Amino acid sequence: MKLFHVSEESDITRFEPRLPTRTDLDPDKGLVWAINERCLPNFLTPRNCPRVTYHCNETTTEEDKRLFLSSESVRHVVAIEHKWLEMMRRTTLYLYEFDRAGFYLLDEGAGYYLSETTQFPINKIIIRDPLGALISRGVEVRMIDQLWDLADRIQQTSFHWSLCRMGFAQQR
Picture 1: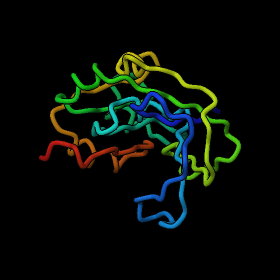
Picture 2: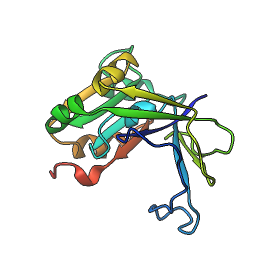
Picture 3: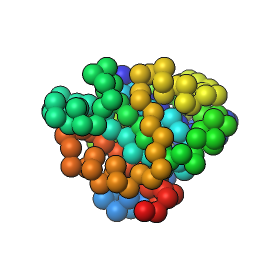
Picture 4: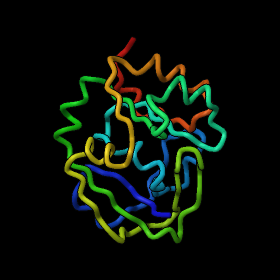
């Protein structure tokens, strides 16, 4: 399994642990965040792009699949607001790959891994077309007017889901 950090910065050579802003983590322990390859599509958008993401897991029900996926071949969805499409087209992303040593799992469903030590990337991948990168990974990209209705509904399902940067989402 590969671990990545996604950034719009092209020249990061080292990742220093930073104090977390999440209230469920120790505020005095610096962390380096990484995402596994399965959940990487959740971050293949501009950093501040609000999004609702969800993907199938071993407990996803057939009913949820029928209600929230467009076809049987879809396993992962990233939904963004219409107004972010142009920014998505203009953004270049940099995937910094890490050696797994030194990272531990925080959240299986979200694919989050943490390290408490300085990390140095072992590879950098440039993504000039995030939309194309999502599509090439078999992810269904949805453009919707506002995210809140979907966010409310998806939290009640059997999918693994993530709500990212919702503070930037259009209000209802």
